[in-house]
Amino acid sequence: MAQDCHLPIINEQHLQNIVLVRTSVNACLRGLLGTNKVAVKLLNDRKWIDRLNRAGILGQVSSERILVPLGLFEAHSVVGLVRDWMTQGSLHSLLHERDLFPELSTAVCLQILSDVAEGLAQLHALSLPHGALKSTNVLLDQQFHAKLCDWGQEVDLHSSAPNGRGPRHRDLPYVSPEVLLGSATSIEADLYSFGVLLWETLNRKQPCDDIDLLQTKLELGVPVELLPPTTPQKHVLTQLIIRCLNSEPQKRPSAAECALVLRETVAAIDPQMLPKAILHLKSCKNKSCKRTSKNWTSKIMPQPETLPMPSSQNLQGKVSPPVAIRTRSQTGGCRVEAGNRAVHSNNGRQRIQTQQSTSLRSPCLSPTTLNRISQVQGNQVNSQLSADRRCCRLLLERREAIVRYMTEGRFNNLLDVLRARQAVNHETYEIITAGLTLTARTRCLLDICSCLGENVAMLVATTLGLVSTDHT
Image (cartoon, rainbow, N blue to C red; front, side, top):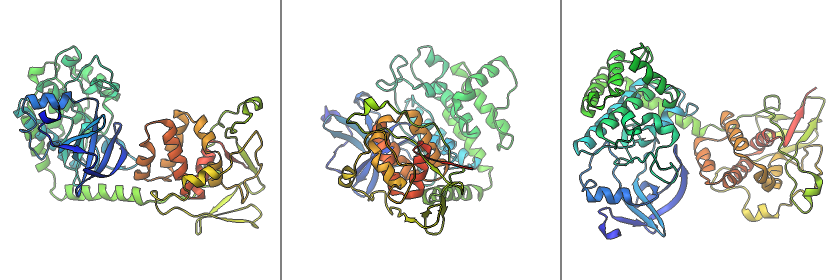
């Protein structure tokens, strides 16, 4: 089968420094092909590649606005597409990760949409529908120019999303009415998806929130405000969205017409605005990645319910589950000193120094060391958090018990708290969430947070209900 493929075969010997990274959709591999950073999108099968090869499409697609595969990755039973690594991620992340990009200039959005329309027009010139146009399939390079990926797909509405090529529930708003009724993907269906993408990008909202209601109002002729009041060329872009969302496919505009409208809209913007907006986005991202964890006090730490505590009969010979350690004091809890990152006891006589790991790739404790740490047996816990019972050590001692009783809800809440308090940066977040199972993600989170110092460990322990402070 490999010899029929026009793409060069790339095996695991050709790639270096391969790591699994989390994306806005699921996960992919990242590595080096020579000196170029590449991504490997894993495939369930080779039907997509074989179909495009039979049609002779792969050799014809060549554009700055379309992400063309560099080769076919094969390793044992794993098959994937090797493509350039897009440093700024997906349009979906840019729009909806507001903690990373709190402000987003309309000028950048219009440039991206112009790039998408141009790429779509080039695919349509080859009579090739994209088939799965959505914000997660628009990737961004270093200068926030867009490239279309995962093009040429055939959507099967009867197959499940994880195993087949059917759309996920969150992707259904992008699917045109005729495709939902059973028609094949088409160029006209792409334009409906582009209309949804226009609305999503310029409003910075998930399409599943309002798109169905908007479609109904448009069909009934009810006046609606499709775009924010400050949108440049608001009337022109509103009409473009309405035409793209038309329920009759033949009345939708062409991708080339959309590209022309968007090019004219971008040209009308102040030429200095776009470079400044791109620099601002990069600055926001760099600050988020470089920002260190802040200092917290027990007064503002959330106190969710403690993890379940089984009966003592069930704990025979097993690791005890996490339980709350309540620290009582007349001064209202422990105090974190910002200057030297030290935790002082309430009476001031004890001083616990904490050290932060300088690199996530070199954790402060090896697996061997972790295995040597004794597990807490039975139902007994200390009533105070003292020098020999720091939060870092507590997380390590109770690591497997925390993993055992972790749920998706608790894990997501803990991750949200860590990101809200800026205890982990974007790269660390990707490392933690790259695990394919809840157990793997939980272990990774605990290991990393144990290495980030006492402040972060204290936040984790408090959020999980392992440590709490009563105030008087």
